[in-house]
Length: 79
Image 1 (tube, rainbow, N blue to C red):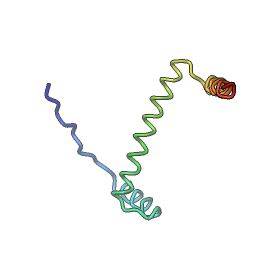
Image 2 (cartoon, rainbow, N blue to C red):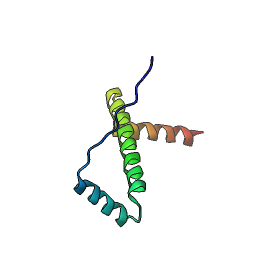
Image 3 (cartoon, rainbow, N blue to C red):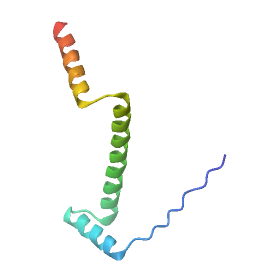
Image 4 (cartoon, rainbow, N blue to C red):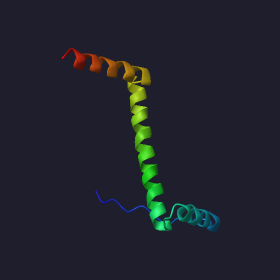
């Protein structure tokens, strides 16, 4: 099966580019580095979101995790 490359043409308002450039300069970065940083953070947010959704579907809650951790620590302490 041959997959075609997605169309990467993006239309961006000049105000958005200017705001992004200003945000990058405020962090001491150029626009390219800032874009890489923002896109990387977006990818990680998406991954964490998917993980959180899977955990929710499995019934893994913060309370369950805390109880599980306490149980593991008790087992370690018991030797």
